[in-house]
Every structure is written in structure tokens, then in C-alpha cells.
Image (cartoon, rainbow, N blue to C red; front, side, top):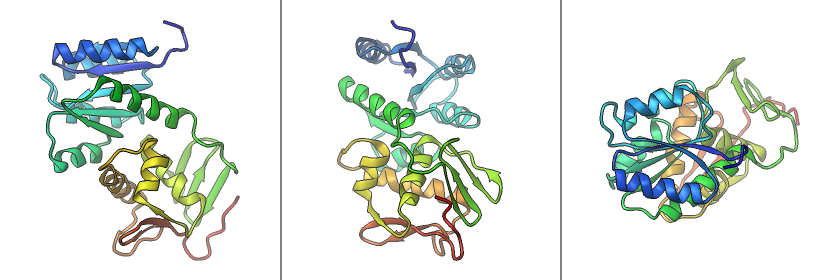
Length: 238
């Protein structure tokens, strides 16, 4: 494996699934560390250096939800959830605790590899910014530094939340459909992922202290999608 290979932490307690996914990822050029329980996952992640985490929710020792929360406490590394729970509520809950994407078992290892590649492309090779910084009143988006501040306080955004904010704020007032945001933020077009965008918007609004009933920044356009508005008197520093 070349020294430039992306490093993936694979956390899956079912041995057959773990071995199959590991084989597909390695065949596609990834360096993979695979573990079978939540404690081992946290121990491995603490050593650092991973570019992406593939995380099963149903884990022994430490549940996948808790592993996700602890990773999110200090890292915005992309996380793909694996879950046997097919209900929409369970998938949305996983996104709300910080996962960027999900796959419901049984799934195709080839699709998982495609999702991994899409998330890594988005995290590492976003569209080249047309400006270094954008100011919208109390909200500052530092595109060059990949940082967001609200009232001078830096926000802890996941990769998906950051990409969503940058996409919406690039053209204030423009309405984006959920499907457009799926393609621009998640990097692919799969049926049913509009709800994932809703979850990311909900999380982003909470971090922006943006009341969905009277939003300052992110407005819902019912039946269509979302738009970003600069607050009154805010000057864009582009």
C-alpha cells in the first residue's frame, strides 16, 4: 500500500461483513484498520491518522452511537454508519449524532466503496473557493482556513455541515432544492437522501443558534428546499 493511501477505520462486529468490506476497500487502494467492538474502535481512533470511519451501530462493549459521539467531540472526520435498523427514525438519529452518511444492511460493498470515495472527495477537494472569507454580520466563514465563527466563537461543524453552509452561503437568496443539496453536499444521487439533508440542516441551525421558526440565516422554502439569507446590514467580504 502506498504511503499516500487514505486510512479507513472499519468498525464492524460481524466477521464476514468486516472481512468482505475490508477486502473491497483494500482492493480499491485504501489502508484499512478493522476492529470488532466499540472499545477497540475508540482505542484505535485515539492513535489518530484516520481519514474516514465506517461504523456499525450495533456493537459490543461500547455502542456505535456512543463511539460516534466521542469521535465527534474532537474530530470532524467523515463517518459512514452501518445499521441493520431500516427505520427512517433510526437513520435520522444517526445523522443527528454526527454521522455524515449511512448504509442499511444488507448493502453492496461496492456501493460502500463509492460512498467512501465520495465523502473523501468532498472532504479534501471541495470546489476551489472564489474568495478567502465571507462575512454575514456575526457569521464569518473562513474558506481559506476551513473555519466558521459566530460572534467571534469558532463553531465545531462536521464536514457535511461545513459543506452545506458553504454551498448555501455562496449565493445568498438562491433557493436550493433538497436534491441539489444531496448532490452538492453528499456527492451522489441516491433515492431517499433528501431526509439526510433535512437532518444536516437541523444540526447546522442548532449550531448557528438559528431558530427554524424565525431564522436569521437558513430559511425553509416549503415544497422546494432551503435558501441562505444574510442578516440585514451584513456585508459580504468577498
